[in-house]
Length: 198
Ligand SMILES: CC(C)(COP(=O)(O)OP(=O)(O)OC[C@H]1O[C@@H](n2cnc3c(N)ncnc32)[C@H](O)[C@@H]1OP(=O)(O)O)[C@@H](O)C(=O)NCCC(=O)NCCS
Image (tube, rainbow, N blue to C red; front, side, top):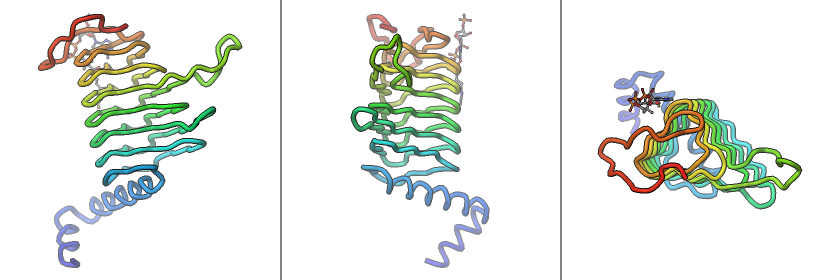
């Protein structure tokens, strides 16, 4: 055991091994706060978790880059955030969960992205609106993209850097801009008929 640990230190270098160890320790601590965690979680730096009233479900091998932020707010009922296996959440990306955000497996959510399932205030004096966000498996969200309440992003879709997504994205579609519009289908994905943005 000791020899194999020393071997790992020699191969990877002390600093890299310590950094990886800390990433697993942070991941383990986060998993302990989760309602459900399937396997190892890796947290590469500080992670801000503000759990007012909610629960977190993590698949195995979920990866958080430094300074990601999770807000589980749950104003009228508990909020729920679910992140599928082998999905990564980029530097400083923020997940604001008033009610529900579900992110599938093998998704890449880049840095400085923002996902909000509510607006943080009632519009025109009406009640505040919560609409779940659903990101299917294999979705790639470019840096600085914003995903607003009620959006469903289909399997394998790509959201361009800086996009503001206000409407659903069909599986395999690439959308860019503000508001996000379809530009083409992702290579290797079959075209899906019907409107791309509903
Ligand atoms: C969306 C993306 C994947 C598309 O790449 P691509 O298929 O090579 O796209 P193209 O460069 O052929 O662009 C297609 C059109 O969309 C436009 N476009 C591409 N990306 C755009 C973006 N992020 N915002 C606005 N318009 C964009 C192009 O200007 C082009 O428009 P045109 O046909 O009128 O000239 C890529 O542009 C992108 O945004 N990547 C994200 C990068 C990133 O965030 N990396 C983080 C690392 S995890």
